[in-house]
Length: 120
Image: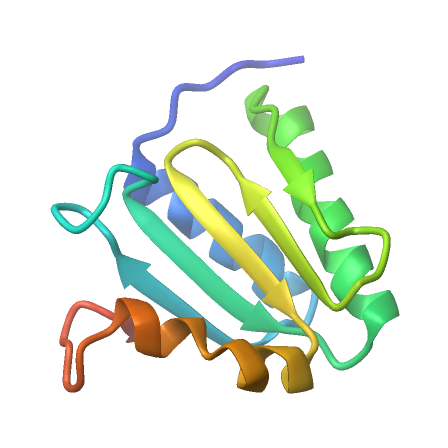
């Protein structure tokens, strides 16, 4: 298994690419640097069903492990409503749309008009 040290930006880009390839919807990137110690970036996206949410999360974790030797902590995969993937530098949240609307994580981390968030 190759181990490639990625910068947090490269890791974020790999994550977004994997999610995009899996047909994730509404991918949002949030720059956390200087705001919290939990990571450098947060990526939030939606899947259309519990099955897709789980499949996207599994594919992302496997890709990061196989291609970059990065082990991740995963929570919530059993239900497929909200899967949290902690890669160390990037925190990934994969939601079903209704669950994402309910928790509204974006509002917690993004002040109104924050220019550092980018839609992918």
